[in-house]
Length: 441
Ligand code: HEC
Ligand code: HEC
Ligand code: HEC
Ligand code: HEC
Ligand code: HEC
Image (cartoon, rainbow, N blue to C red):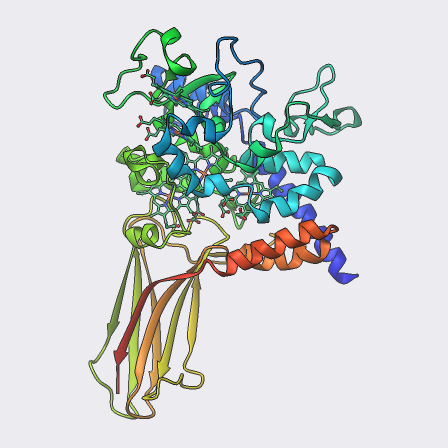
């Protein structure tokens, strides 16, 4: 019983937090208009473009132009792959292509029956095209199309839902897909060509899918903002928004240098979006130094060691979300390779919140250019000891425990199996970014 109450309150919290975060989609223009410096005309046009581009949900594409071949008319990434192989291969290896993975699906498959409003909110970031969503808001007069803007108080504003006739289960699995970012009303949108020009290379009628509309809005951090930043009055803990990546970037050195999210996460326009789940990416952004006050210690002396983590190349806090943790770990091992009792010390770096999201326990994330030092002090009680220092990244730390709690709440075998799979995969994703063994006695 106690547990059920806890889970219910967890669900309510989640609902609140999600409702708040989704409200930001489609409101980019409003938010930007409030920023301190008035945007130049170009900026304004680009932000207006983005406000229109990122509606929740992205409106149905409608009918493809009559002269489109079935390949041009396909919204599936595999269709685009026929001509844009490189982007497809990159994207397939990225988390954007897995955003409807078992952890998300395990929740949305029941939510879409029990609480369609909430499921559609999840989809607004995880599967944003109308064609990816089983249900749509039933439009009534004076109602807004999007589920979240129809959530004002008053009974008349409670949205009702109906089956979506253009739903494609196959496209839903593709998550944040090519079309989600590039196609609106069957028109392709993309960045300027690499030489900066906006024109198609031939008359539109002679090009596949009628060429493309090109805009520098694709090169801006605001392109990513709708899904990677809560709005200013969104869910916050300890005065800090729960998802704050764009603002962290905006306040840091990279925004001033004109380095948008794309310059690190899509360098050379690659569609890789590597982040906290990728050891190489993390190592590129963070350096670890180990120092000891002496080269060797006699029995009875104290080893004093320090590991310093420096955020040398992460464009926002390391890590930015509440979900990953970075574990700084120390231990002594004896001459036989056996761990010395009670010599283990661990410190978690990150922003730790309770599972029900009501409390922040600590926030030790490292801002761009800043560092964090962790010390280890212990008396040496024998010869032949080795100090083992390591830094391990647990990208899905929060979710692993969260899924454990969700599991008994799942009604169907299928949902349970998906959540179990997500838990297993989450656990298997930890990796070290630093390990060093130092003989100390
Ligand atoms: C999360 C959004 C997103 C997704 C998903 C996505 N793209 Fe892109 N794409 C972008 C952005 C942003 C750029 C521009 C990057 C830049 O200018 O640095 C871009 C650039 C491109 C370009 C121009 C590349 C060049 O070298 O000039 C093509 C073509 C393209 N994408 C095709 C695709 C295809 C095909 C897929 C699916 C396999 C896809 N994109 C998925 C956001 C996305
Ligand atoms: C339509 C929503 C949407 C847009 C737009 C979007 N993302 Fe994402 N992004 C997501 C979701 C959802 C995930 C998580 C996928 C998962 O693991 O389930 C994600 C994951 C990522 C990750 C991987 C993080 C990790 O945990 O390793 C990076 C990096 C990233 N996005 C960067 C970007 C950048 C840069 C842009 C802009 C060019 C962008 N995203 C645009 C929704 C979006
Ligand atoms: C405002 C955009 C947004 C909304 C709305 C949203 N998410 Fe996410 N979600 C993200 C991003 C970005 C990530 C990746 C960053 C991270 O690790 O937290 C993510 C990661 C996740 C993950 C971990 C990665 C994975 O694929 O297992 C799960 C599970 C998840 N979301 C479930 C949900 C559910 C369920 C909902 C609806 C109740 C939801 N999300 C609503 C943006 C969103
Ligand atoms: C039959 C081949 C073909 C298919 C299929 C195709 N494209 Fe293209 N696409 C092209 C060609 C050719 C261009 C370059 C047009 C030009 O030179 O002006 C292009 C241009 C683009 C651009 C503009 C950036 C650039 O490289 O000039 C984007 C974005 C884009 N396509 C996205 C997509 C997406 C998304 C899909 C799938 C939904 C897709 N395309 C399917 C052939 C194709
Ligand atoms: C200067 C390079 C740089 C810039 C700019 C940058 N990032 Fe990152 N980002 C990284 C590195 C390196 C990592 C891996 C370490 C980490 O996870 O903090 C990362 C990780 C991430 C993650 C993984 C989740 C997490 O908790 O860390 C997401 C999501 C993300 N970035 C999104 C963005 C978005 C959105 C922007 C723009 C507003 C952006 N990044 C700007 C370098 C950058």
